[in-house]
Image (cartoon, rainbow, N blue to C red; front, side, top):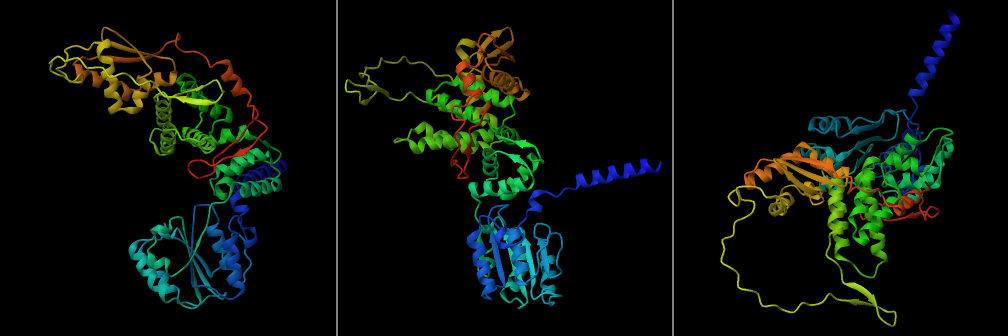
Length: 502
């Protein structure tokens, strides 16, 4: 029995070790100023201040999440005290306070009483207050008095992602350092270094995608690498795209082509394919916006529809229904008025031919008839599909824009009390068959014409057609697979669209 017991104990120990592996963002937290990436101006200034003995009594570190604010605060606390910095070994004279959990005036009053106590073993007693913007107004007022007249042995370091929420009186009594988002190239290089140390096999293009997905936050990018990487495992672009829920470059190229030709059929097919693949519509909106922005930068003219589309794509991530918001934005773009046609004259120079100006026609004298709104119950005592369907669409457009995007592509048919709506795409069929959509449409018809109908969405196999061979080919092989290009998204976050091999 003893060998079996030892074997079980070994297995339990192995399981315990495997489940307590230290996260990469903790394992590779910067321990000195030289290890901090992307904040050279700040770390150099702090190092020079320490060397010159110009230590401030209060610092404010502000900037986005995951850019090194807390790490630099800890390094500074150890450096001013000439203490070695080792993770998970707190020092009695370096006190970290989470303002989100200790935001009341009572906690700050307690802090004010304790700051007068001399350090136990170090030269300075350093208080690091994280998420400082979470303090209440009363707590700020209590802290202000201490910042105005601090004991000589106390240093405060406030860290926040929202410096604008701090009172000006607090900010004015600190040395303010603004941390910037970390650049994609610098972050990708650091991720590559860590991947090699961890013996992860990951392609340079995949590293670029991870760095871009971090949106300036090294901690976020490192957490993504932690999810993907394992010793000996190979990670490529498709693997990263699946993790991020982002579309491939080929799909983005096809969407751009459909927008440029104002062809809604292939555009809707691509959106349906992306939905079936579980691609995040917000990621699609960001990458599409980035590609369109690049085309806009390279163009000599600005088209109104493109500017309007870019402004709408910006709002997709904040939408409650991002998939529907994206679809509506793209449908509105392809439904734009036709532009002036471009032709070539005999000299092969492009000239723009404006649309012909119609001759003025004297209008006929209108008949004096009383106008009755089509949506009014007294307009008709019965719903007539051929005459009244356009009015239903107008009502849906004003009451439920997301539903309207599907209805405008439907082929309606009325038999008895059943209104059948045929679609080419399952995406729109599902949208109309949702209980909320059915109720909305049935209510519009009931209130407007006094007719109670039942709505049913179906797929018209005659209308549904597979993706064209050209579309399929472009999805299977990207002609730009060997070129990697970094682009700036309309959000300023440096969206990167990577070419990939399928």
